Amino acid sequence: MLSEVRNLQGRLLGKVELLGFELKDEANLETLIQDVVKSSEIEGEFLNPEMVRSSIAIRLGLENPGLEHTDRDIDGVVEMMLDATQNNNKILSDERLFNWHAALFPTGRSGAYKIEVAQWRTGDMQVVSGAMGREKIHYEAPSPQFVKTEMDKFLNWFNTTSSLMDPILKAGVAHLWFVTVHPFDDGNGRIARAITDMQLSKADGVNQRFYSMSAQIKNERKSYYHILERTQKGDTDITEWIVWFLECLRKAILSSNTIIDKVVQKHLFWVRNAGLISNERQQKMLNKLLDNFEGNLTTSKWAKITKTSQDTALRDILDLISKGILIKAGSGGRSTHYILVKP
Image (cartoon, rainbow, N blue to C red; front, side, top):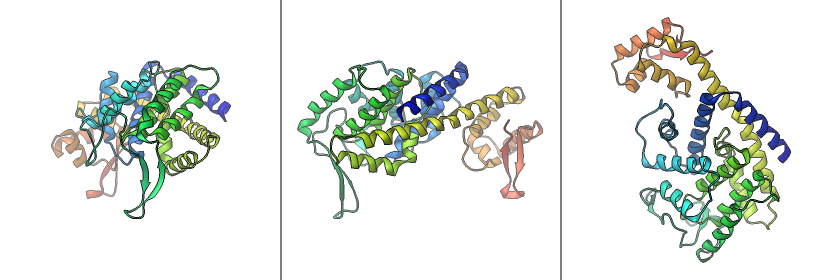
């Protein structure tokens, strides 16, 4: 399994090299958006993808086609993910982990609850589900007095370069080890996945991301929690977890073709149509359509998003129809909407 994953990894990186700098940056951006959004969704938090795009693009110094406004929670997740992957050669220390934790919880609260931020937890930790009075304990983490000692062991191991373990296998072990210690009051899953991406970046030999492990874990969320629970309640043989991790990684790398194809398609669209665009409103809306616009495009949506009148929105749309960039769909009236003509 490891040989197959290594082969797919090499083929993907070879394919990416053919894209050129601009498209590589775009593929990296799209992958990071998936990573941030899906890692949060695993924990039941749903972030605005456009705000995530904006936050990442600003920090990478890329042209920002998304919203200008972001919030602190989104910026915090983005800062953690970028630090993990772009600075994968730096030491992972308790201070760095504390900074990530503070970035995840800028208000010192998780939902309605106040939590301990930027420090190891001082309370007991259980992973529980079910209604009150019928709770099921899935996992009980080490007592708080052992957390610092366990994290010292983990960080010493993680920062030690060894030829005895393949870097991809080390990513799987690191993920399991961190969530098993469960050192923080909250955010352990997201930080574990950031550590995983950090180690996978080392394994790839690049500080850009072209496949999203978090997106694949989100697709297999139920089996993810099931295999974690089985492994944590078992003995110290973690082979079953490693097999699951490698299979998940294999699927993640294969799914990367979707992102790369989307980036190439977007590039071809602008090569063909850039000279036909009349104004920034059209450019903004076309980028949105190319970036998985939700629902149907109507004149009212165009007007609302571009903050203009319906008459101006209709003129913009009719101009693009005349140039063969949009086509009219629907049976007329309120059902009328417009579809992008892709290369």
